[in-house]
Amino acid sequence: MVTKEEVIEQYDIEAMDEADNVDLSEDDLENGSKGQLIKRAGQLRDRRNELNQMASERASKRDDLNAKTREKVDEAQEHREKRDELNEQVQEHKDKRNELNAEANELFDEVEELKSDMELGSGKSIEELKEEIEDLEFRQQTEVLDAEDERELIEKIDEKREKLAEKKEKVDDTSELDELVEEAEEVRSEASQHHQKVTELADKAQEHHNQMIEAYREADDIRDEADEMHELFVEAQEAADQHHEDFVRVQKRLRELDKEEEEERKDERAEKREEEKEEAEEIYQKFKEGETLDTEDLMKLQKTGLL
Image: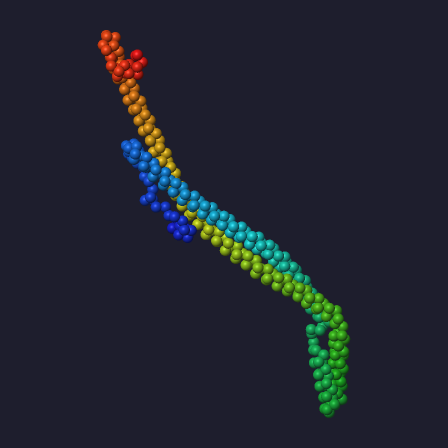
């Protein structure tokens, strides 16, 4: 199982150092000066932008890995389809081979049956019968036998000659047997060709099966890397979101401070106008009582609208 550290090293991406993150406490937010908050807002903004860039790079790497995963899965699927196609051909040749072997077996059974009918497979061969006849004839010619033994010997020779004649006749009539044997051997040969195709196609199917397994394994490995890269993306994005949220909070606090300052300035202006009005009324009262006013007093009366 791949680790985040291995993914960072393998794909040469910048690791996120939490020490570079910018913290914002409630005390900083509520009691910090305007200048301090402006500085903190800049730090939060800059770190947020760095983290967003980091998250974007990680998301891009993740998407590339997901694309490679899909490519490997597609490759595996192609090998699966080719394997299945070859296995179908294997089954077709197996069926044909088995069918031909069954047919050949039937033909060879017919051959044996025909041989049995012709008794070619039983008894002595032509050569054996010839040798036996020659031996008997040689005995007849060389030995002195009485009449009874001579008669028995002649009968044996005649019997052997009859068997020899029958055997020769059967052997001469084997054209049907030869044709049947030839047909059986041809069918067996054709079955053997299909068996060879079964072997060849099965080997190719196994190759595609092995390639399919390897492609799926590679897809799993790349998917694991993509998952780790996604977690790294989430890590950077969540940190960026937190910095953005804190930045927004500081901005809001700064607007509140601006508003408070504006309210203070308004109050000060209103207080100042009230003081000026009171002073102008005093001057106006003096004017009504006949006192002489200098230029500054006249300007104060004009400013307040009393003159």
